[in-house]
Amino acid sequence: MSATSTRVAPQTTPTETAIPPATEDSNAQPESTEPPKSDEPIENSAPASISTVTVPLVSGLATSGLPTIEVVKKLKPSVVQIVTEVAAMGAINQAVPSMGVGTGVVLDKEGFILTNNHVIRDAQVITVTLNNGKTFPAELIGGDAGTDTAVIKIDAEGLQPAVLGKSADL
Figure (cartoon, rainbow, N blue to C red):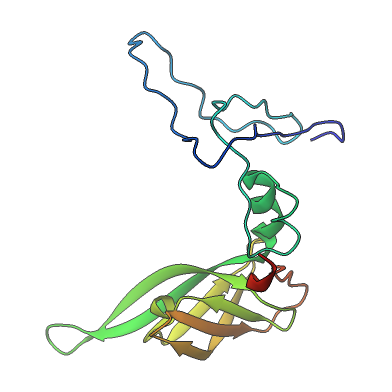
């Protein structure tokens, strides 16, 4: 994307809906599902009722009123995939491997990652995949079933932690 390209979502009031009206045109051609090339600007063809979304938990983003796509771009390097392996007992007392998948967010450069407790519950093996495709074994630091939160840790360099805000600043 060139330095002069901009992406703007129209502003709306909180009472407006983001659902475009249905059309009865049976001859309408479906829009292309191919993503635009990275060096091409994206035209804003969204209905006028779609608004800018703010995320209050991300420091500095809530007050700036960034469009959702910009928030996602800022957080993408901090989001990880978590794959778990659990050995369950089968019908004839044989270990049957089972896999689970979830996501997490990098909390700091030391490798602490916040995820959901149900993602890592009973896992014998936890593997984290970063946004750049690199994978790392993870260890469980702790979890809480009541709040469905857990912290795991990986040993990796160059991590980009998410910038979190304070609820008191809302």
